Length: 89
Image 1 (cartoon, rainbow, N blue to C red):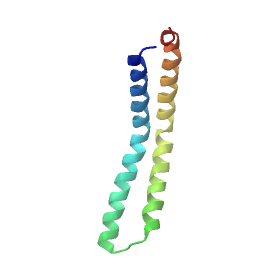
Image 2: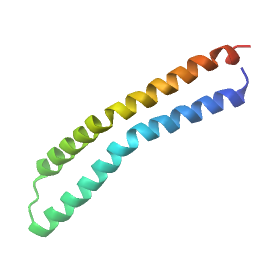
Image 3: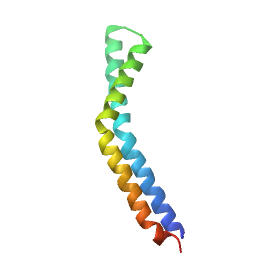
């Protein structure tokens, strides 16, 4: 196995991790910014409000994208297993 194959596998794995974690991170970022602006305007400085809202939003995003995430993981795993005979030389 040469280094270009290892680099390509690492690149694919990192891109998959970014694709899977990206939607939840973006939702957490958006909810955090909106809640922070609302807290700054209303002068309510309760930290649990931000935490609970982000937790609920990320959980909802996870549940909504779970099917797509599982399909992407299974597709990547199948592609990886199909490429195994070519990796060992």
